[in-house]
Length: 291
Length: 256
Image (cartoon, rainbow over all chains, first blue to last red; front, side, top):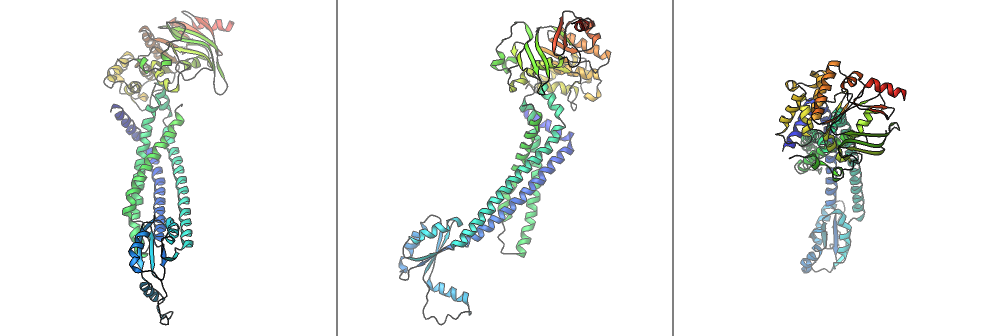
């Protein structure tokens, strides 16, 4: 209790003593956290888009011409038991024919057809786009199935794209975090440098390393938190303003809803700020502590 | 009851010094700085508990280096350093703070925390030890009284004269009740009157049982105080005189 009180007092004294330095650190953290924040918003939306596109992909299983619809229930439950399957819907050949007619609407005369050439089919939705191919092959073995189609090419290409986006995103994110840490630790180093004589004196009178370090670390955490809070405010407010505008001009865009994105983004940014402040101070103080 | 011994590692608690009543023992010390400069050559020294010792010699003779060994600012290349029967040369990094609390050090440039008052500077040395908060005011008041600065306790170092700042530094060095007080050119920046004040305080501290070692080249002070004088020259101890005299010692050294 006494120690915590002592450390907090040291932090307050330091901040009051060099407010400009604190402003510099806070601003640095804020700008960098903001960049990370906007980047995360972008990534979230890209992955949302990928998920949206992937949800359109499904396995279509065409049933054998002699399929007896009485067995539909049993077939459906067998398909549902396959791993990765989310749902199954039955498309009768009549429905398919109507659908086809509508799509072709006057462009081709279907009136010449005396009978419906289409088979009954099952449309199978999968849980994850990655499962599409696996499920497609499994469905073949279920029985009563003539042919399976699952847009292998499209699926593969989209998955590859998704992977690339994710990898690039991760690399960029890591680079951003590393540079954030470097810049912040350098800024904090200035504040520590200004007090290197104090650190010497503290060591001289027998202060343990952690005793000298903690006020600096707390100061770093505090500055990181303040900077990150400002950044989080800017990011979330501008995203809240931006989304309705986007939706009003391009309504079908699958934007990540602010209500689902921000509740994890803001705490994440705060955590990041605190962490960067802590590590930045740690790195800086250690340069002046003889370890 | 708080005891220094509890803070020390087993290695430090094991006495290995040769003399039971020694405060400082140096055996076969060679000190080489990282840049390759050798500051001390084959130094042998015994200071008994309660002694008052002057270390004299020109700049670069090794006085400061010798003191640095004693508060573990430097570790010797070889040889052994004992302070109060503890092997200081073999201290681990984490054990240095507990040594620093047992050994008070003052410097020519005072080394006070500029942003703290006289009182806070002294209290800080207690706070770092984790001393009980209730005891701090009593102890701080006691040492500030000893150096005659209790009335100026709220002043910042910048508002004190050089002599007063050095007295704050002495109070800070004393507040942990050290067995050994080291002073590296304590009067180097002070006028003669202030210098005498400082030396009188150091004498009083010594009279209270604390061993005191003062590195200086203030001839007048050394000659007047008639204490043990150790003369250093180019990293070696060249003279060791009981009730010595700087002027005589210098002459002797030059003859050697």
